[in-house]
Amino acid sequence: MNLYHDIPLGNEDFSEINAILEIPKGSRVKYEFDHKTGALWVDRVGKTPIDYSFNYGDLPQTWNEGDNDPLDVIILCSYPIAPGVVVPLRVVGGLKMVDSGEDDYKILAVADDKYYSDINDIADVNKKELEDIEYYMLHYKDLHGKKIDLNGWDDKATAQAILKKCHEDYKKKFGK
Image 1 (spheres, rainbow, N blue to C red):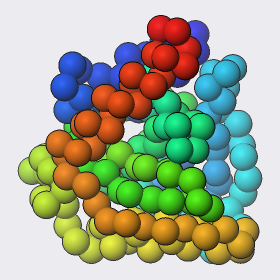
Image 2 (cartoon, one colour; image 1 turned 180 degrees about the horizontal axis):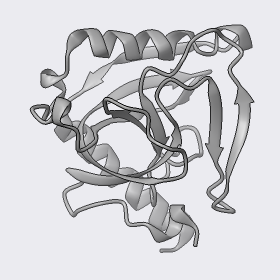
Image 3 (tube, rainbow, N blue to C red; image 1 turned 180 degrees about the vertical axis):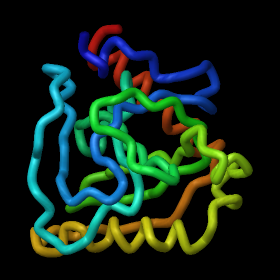
Image 4 (cartoon, rainbow, N blue to C red; image 1 turned 30 degrees about the vertical axis):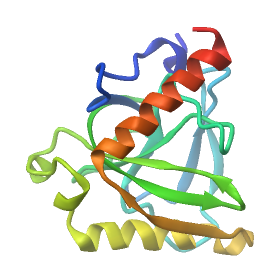
């Protein structure tokens, strides 16, 4: 089974989605899901002294033409989640990010976690939590010499529209 091709993205309006978890909250190890083989690889051990303050993964059956990879997801959850598992999520927004000149959009979603049960859209997310995510994203590649630009947060509806486009791009690319 290849999780990328065999797990459905989510419901019809993309308000609920599935993610393939790559990197647990608190980790300095960068895991990379290989959409071709379905394997989870250690990409690198963090070169900066900064931990992921969130769980992070890929979205099945999506394709981001900006960076030629599956669409990424930042997962809000109180606890680390094991790499390689499928996580059901609720979409709440998106982060407009450019990595070394390439669009690298991030969906923001919440796990089924009582501490995040009242979050339904980006405006509901604690500002400090959004700032922590922004700080991490701006600095995790500092020692690699790569430039990251953040262009703000999108609301849930905009993120859902991007999910729809990336799902359509996946179907075109892979003939599904």
